[in-house]
Image 1 (cartoon, helix red, strand yellow):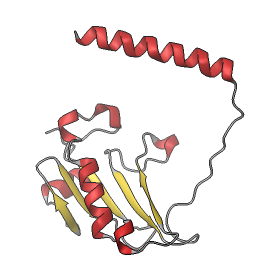
Image 2: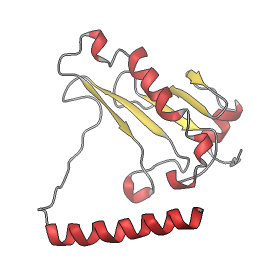
Image 3: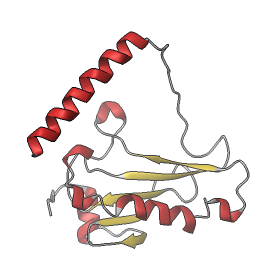
Length: 152
């Protein structure tokens, strides 16, 4: 397991800093955020230190989404608990420009009970340029094909 002695999340994983732990597996830890944007704001972190998502080995991500899913039920964010207009966000940022504050991959599970609490964001959608989108599609398919060939 990769670790960084100065990383607050690595210190939490090692038990050097206490947390309000919820669920834990051999590769993943979840706990309450101490600076929540909403009641029930949870962090889910891989037990592998890397600043960006693409640097986490796959085996350290296998429990991540199932754990988040389980937490949505524990927090009563699922439809079995009579939600009416409520929701939640699952957020994972990469890099300072993308609002990542701690350089250890982490996921936020943020309940959204009303317009004032939880995550607020804008989505500056751009008009569709189908020619440019088609060109990008071809480029990405070529990259995916090359990646597959490298693995063979």
